[in-house]
Image (cartoon, rainbow, N blue to C red; front, top):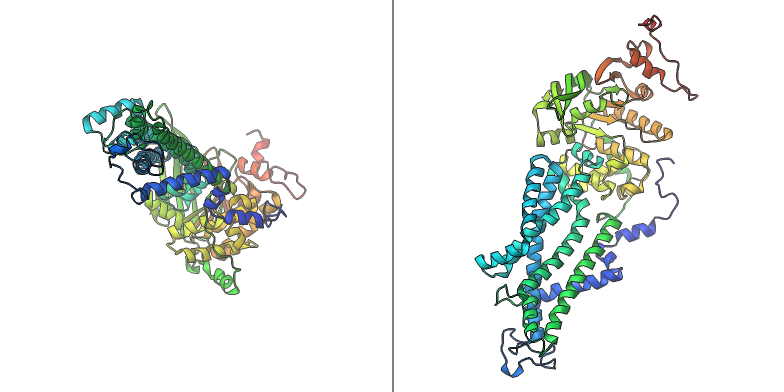
Length: 603
């Protein structure tokens, strides 16, 4: 399939777009269970907020003439053992019951999700501290702790729920930790790092977006548990006697069970009703979030005018002619190793040396395991866990990359060094539209306003040959083809006007026809913008089509380098000759392998 077409083929897209454009609340309300749960949650939230205005009598007013009165016109649900109106007390009890449960859930979520996010994302000392801390909390007997706290600190409801939330935080921690560990090394997270986004922004936008649905389910369950525990404690008599809660009303109803059993029924029904509604609402909300992805606000679609298209031609910065040929990247005697259990390093890149000038395209060629990707990741400052630069020099335009860390490296990656990965679909976050992901890096790295960033994103999509930039801008990654996704990533790489683009096998995941189109696009954009490119590949055919110079790596070492014509006409190293011999000709057969004269002599 050509990359000019989306994977949806000829299927009509209007119904899908209309469905996605509806708000999340409307989607929930189209589900019968969603209607039941949403109405219940909204009703009780309203009662909790406006309880004082809804009651007819003072909930604490004692009426000795209405002791244990049955339901009547005056007392709709009857009166308790002191003649207090049960209906009004249930209304006031809604506030204290729900607010106490909400406090517990917020406490648990803030502690658990924050610690789980940090431990799962950063690992190391964060992982050790978080796991130890939650293990200690889980070992504590929760009910005993609550009873002891009540005996020592008093019977304040909110204090008890605060402590209970602390005890429940490991449930959020474990859930968040496991999910974050599973997605922190996803390619679209690496792409966000390369774009110059800070760890905090990556966690809040790209990581937390994956965790939110399970957290919603967990919050619904924990809220129900908090209501049940709170009511149980109040039923047992542990609580503030001045606080009106459904649990305290359960206790009062149980005392007169043989006299007026309905007094026990009303709070029991409310507790069960709310607990069921909360769990159903959380499940429905989770299902809709999982079905439609992140909620994205759409701007009105307008065709790009000729004026905007003209601006697009001027949007890409062309390097000054007098700077062409200046040294941009200097990698000298680079050595990369990974720490082993024995305490020694397994060296995977040995004494690698290469240079890239401004406006130059250099090919880094080698088979899988040759160390070319490790070298590229070292330049980006994104070596996997355990990887370390052991020796050598790594200088980018006068900046020693080994001496910068954190935010300084983020700014460099986002603004001056860009990255084009080899798996386009995996490097786009499935939770967000193409446009929102392009806008994000423009706003963070370039400091653009939202409207300017959108204009710039549309210009870039038009620049990389998208037939309908507005449609692509509003599409999710699964709605575009692999070739289109690669064009989007090229647009993203160009978005912040970098000096160097590292392209790691940019055509490997595409079919032959699309490969040719992507290579032609890269060639045209490089000539137009003058950006330097480090092309990481195993294919000498791609190198011949795009590069000025080539560096050949084998077993973590540079075995040969030189101008592209010199390497093709007179390869010196046997491994280079083997790679050249593996190039397919126009008939699909491999070219005759180069044989060194010394090879015939058995050397």
